[in-house]
Structure formats: structure tokens, C-alpha cells
Length: 352
Image 1 (tube, helix red, strand yellow):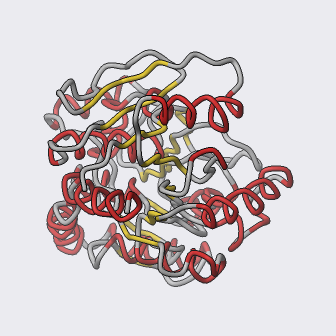
Image 2 (cartoon, helix red, strand yellow):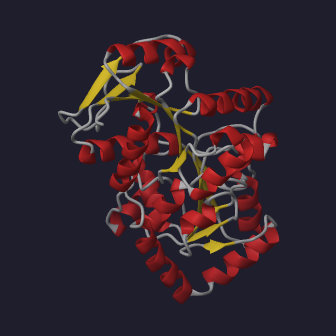
């Protein structure tokens, strides 16, 4: 069966985060491999640059001043009117979406660590996501770890979950070393430095990176959205940077620190690998799975343990070089075309 698929594409046109990287990567993969499938992209904004312009991809602009009304009513009704048999959203799936729909659940950290969320957000997620999973024909998880956790915390997901891994976004493409160094200099950052990337949410555990870097007497650069939950004290905070600046920061960093309490995948690991930046990560969620032996995994959340590991690595240039080689190899294990093929299979299952 060759169904017509409608995607909620709103995140494609927003600032690059893990979610937007997922949707951009998936659409590019589908445009390349799903040549016999019509992909209908619905958003409340006009078509942005970078969306594949192929005969099997169509952009629908549905203006709306209310995001929730758009996702619950406008999108499913417009998608059905356009002939879509399968609707694909993220987390929240409208009751109007029909029984052939698909939802991507990147992680269920709101069950695993409810203290990482604001009360209202936690309540909405714990209520809406299980309901969406129950009404979905298929649920897409971005890692084997996330699949296990979804099935553990939401038993009705049993038999529905398919793993469709993330891959490297098209926003990160290594540049010449001299240019990368010039960009870092233009940001007022002195080298050497350590790097961590992420919205400042409690789940990201950036305070651990700050403490460990301080104990290791290594300058730390933090980049990402402001978020909430307290501001780390001490590091050089750049705020949100563009893709080229982010690439340069990865390339020039001595180490990338990923101290999250939990991740459903962890795209920044692939970004660091692609840029030749050795990675030190926690055991939070899928990070060990995604690193695949290419990163240094610290089995505790004690800053002293992290500081000791950082100091040892910075003294061992041969190990750092081996980590770079493993990172380059590991990032090649993930590809959006493979993800698109797996997703397409889930669509076909849902349509049937």
C-alpha cells in the first residue's frame, strides 16, 4: 500500500533544536527514498528555505493564531481534506487524527524525572502523551532505550513502538580549521576550553559541567537557549549561536561535555563526533547507546569524578586522538535515509 502522509511540520521553521533537527532530517530522508509516497507538510508558517522541492513533497501553509487549536483541529481536518491516510505528529495526537496516525515520542523523561519539569508542563505531558500513544497506530522512538522506557511507563504502547534513530542534522558541516578559529576568536572566547550545548533546563544538568570544569581548572563555554531552572555560575555563556558558530565551537573545543540526567537520543553527541571533538557523557538515558563506545562515559553524577576524568583525558593526547577517530566512524552509523525507510515502514503498518 502507498499511503499519502501528512506531517505536522511546524518545528521545521523554528530555531535549530533536537526536535527541529529531527523533522528536517526526516523530511530530507523521505524526499529522497519515498519517491512513491506523497508527503504533505503542514505548518502555520510559510515554507522555509531548505525544504526539498520534489514532486512528492508539498508544503501547506495553514495560518493560525492559536497553536493548540491548530494542532487539535485545523491540522487533522486539513490533512484529511487533502487526502492523507496517515497523520504524523510529535507527542500530542489529536482525537481527530484518526486511527491510522503516528506519533513520535522522543523520550518520556516527564515520567522518569518529573522534578525536571514545571508542574503544569509535567501534568500536561503525563496526561496527553499516554492518551496519544493509546490512540496511535504506531509510535516512533528515536532509540532502543527510549522504546524500552515508553513500553515500561505506558503499557498500552506494547507492540506499537518502532525505533527510527536520529542522525546528524544538515546544520553541522565542518569548516576549515583557520576559519573555525577565527569565528571562535570573534566570539571573544580564549582557547583551550571545554564545551557544553543545550537549553538550560534542569534535565540537562549543566551545573555538573560547570562544577566539574571549575574543579579541573578548565574554562567552560556554555551555548544554547536560556531555558529555566537556575543559571549556572562561572562559565562563558554565549546564548544561542548560529550553525556556523556552533560548528566552530565544536571544532575548537578540547572536550564536549554531555552531563544530562536523561536523553532520548542526544544529537549533540553526533555533532561533536562530526566535528572531531572528543565527548565525555553521562549514563543518562540513551547517551551510552548513541555514543557506541566512541565517548568516555562517566558512571556517576559526582563533579569530582567528572573533573578527574577530564584532567586525565586532557593529559592523554593519544587517547583523545583515538576518541576522535571513533567519533568520526560512529557518526556514519546514523543516516536520515535509513531513518526515513524505517519510518516509511511504520507509515505503511499504520495505514493497514
